[in-house]
Amino acid sequence: MARLRTVLRGQKAIAICTAILLVFAIVTLLAPWISPHDPIKVNLALKLQTPSAEHWLGTDHLGRDTLSRLLYGARISLGLAFLIFIASLGIGLVIGTIAGYRGGWLDACLMRFCEAVMTIPNLVLVLGMVGIFGPGLMQVVLALMLVQWVYYARMFRGMVISLKERQFITAARISGSSEWKIIRRHIIPNVLPPILVMGTLEMGWAIMDISALSFLGLGIQPPTPEWGAMIHEGKAFIRSHPELMLYPGLMILFVVITFNILGEALSERFGVKRRM
Image (tube, rainbow, N blue to C red; front, side):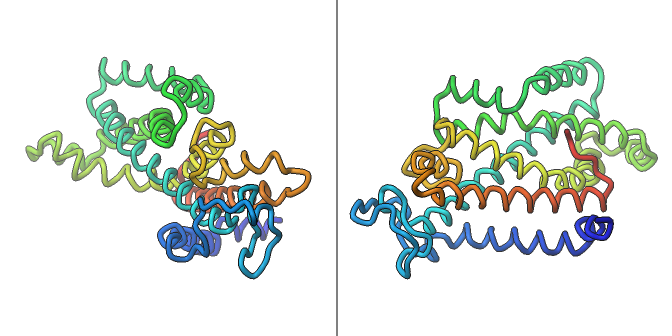
């Protein structure tokens, strides 16, 4: 077990997980060209077919090719998770940097707001927001983005506070550099890499949240292929055709585990603490 733990946290884990995620990224980009069938084309004459040469993973209850829907589902799940990560990171970077560098009443107000948001479980907040704005792709992205940014803001703020009193920042201030120049050239380059490491862990959270909302019928709406929505559609056939739930469930499990192993390995290597 000690040897396995060492391997998982080492260079080999980083290389393997990066390669796997790169393959998934390529699949998401090439899905329109490598998918054998139209993922939303209904053909009731072929419903619930077993795997064959034409349909490698069979078909669902509407005769749609399961493999094609899984490939397009990767595009939706991974693409939305990356979009949420980038948007949350951008908002958190701005708010956290301002709060940490300026300090005072502005810092206190912003951090009290972040703490208030963090006291409520993510999924509960997202469910409330989706319930207000209604189900749909953009509503899910907006809700998750508005929930996730507070964690990045607090992390950025803590790093900025520890950096702004360092000697090289003091030297830049004495030399006449403006606040914006100090933030752009000295603060952000030093705080961004650790947060990007944390992003590998947050991607797993985002994928699970997107899938959970779609499973509940509050996220991606049919006929758009998405892994959580595919599990939701397949639950009616769990006894006769459990593979309709098994395939997308395994995809979610595999991708989230890969992101988590990569994130843990990078966190150990660079000394970044993951959020709980």
